[in-house]
Image 1 (cartoon, rainbow, N blue to C red):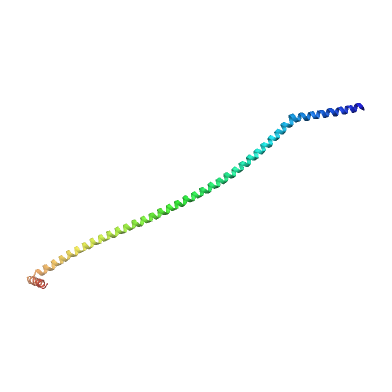
Image 2 (cartoon, rainbow, N blue to C red):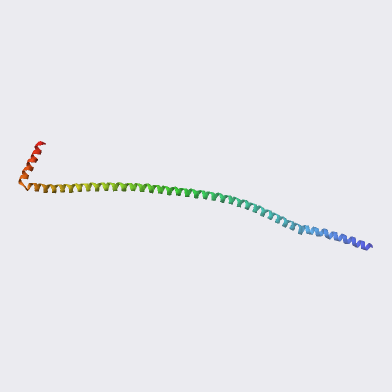
Amino acid sequence: MNLLEDFSLGLFFWQTLLFVLLLLLLKKYAWKPMLNAVNDREEGIKNALDSAEKAKREMENLQADNQKLLKEARAEREAMLKEARDIKNKMIEDAKDQAKEEAGKLVAQAQASIETEKKAAIAELKSQVANLSIEIAEKVVREELSNKDKQIKLVESMLGEATLN
C-alpha cells in the first residue's frame, strides 16, 4: 500500500502543482484580459449611460427653448395681427372721413349749382315777365292811342300826375 499511498500523494502533489500553474497561467493570460474586457465594457456602459443622460438633458433644454421660441412666435404673431387690425381700422376711418368730406363737397357744389340755376331761372322769368308786360303795355297803348280823344285824355292824366308829384 505504500506504493499506492506514494502514488496518491504524488498524484495529489502534481495535481496541486498543475492547478497552481493553471491558476497562474489563467491569471496572467486569461483573467487580466477578461477583467480588462469586463472593466472596458463596464466603462463603456457607464459612458453610454452618461451620454444618454446628457442627451436627455440637452433634449429637455431644446424642448424648453422650442417652447420659448413658440411662445415668442405666438406673441409676435398676435402683435402683428393687432397692428394689422389697427391699420385696417385706421384705413376704414380715413376712408369714411374722406367719403364724408367728398360728400360734403358734392352737396355744397350741388347747392351752389342749384342756387345758380335758380337765379338764372328767376332772371329769365323776370325777363319774360318784363317782355310780356311791355307787349301788353304796347297793345293797351296802341288801343288807347288809336282813338284821338283817348290819346288826349291819357296825355292830360299823365301830365296831371306828373305835376302832383
